[in-house]
Image 1: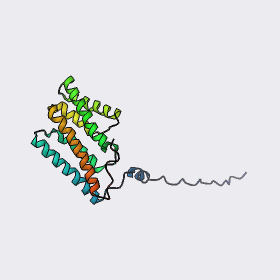
Image 2: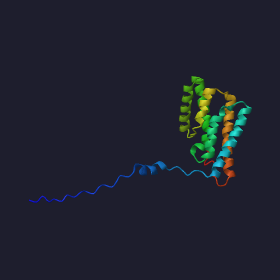
Image 3: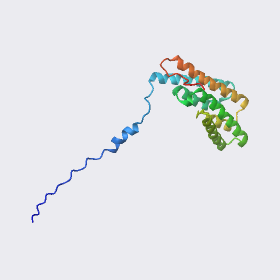
Image 4: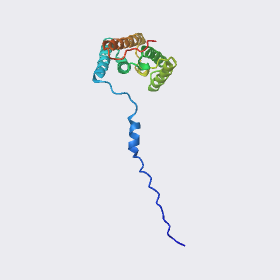
Length: 187
């Protein structure tokens, strides 16, 4: 009996891929390309001009509490004008819905941080059901509950400012032929 057995060594498995090599493509994401400097300047200048006008109006009539929610709205309208939440229907109706929710919450629950948070959530729910999503409008409800502005001046100023913001978005999109047209739809 011979003990000459040949043992074969199985081939070694290939080295595992480096985890970072596999993860990097997934981490890169599918985000759109950054805007050109010219497009970025166009968006920034439009949003800034609208905010300067709204700030001046708010200072003249002593109602500066509109600035935070409308600043966010201006940023959306001028930087991502194709999104549904940037369309006139969402901007104008969203702010008015949240103003109604804010005043209703203020009347029912008073001015408290928890009531402001509840008003923002209720406003978001109503905007969603009305197909007018506009997240910056939630800040309108919060401002109303926490700052208790007089509705006789605040609501007309809010409505006029939202319309002004939309009209400025329209004008600025037409001022530059290469930019995307705003709005995609009105109502």
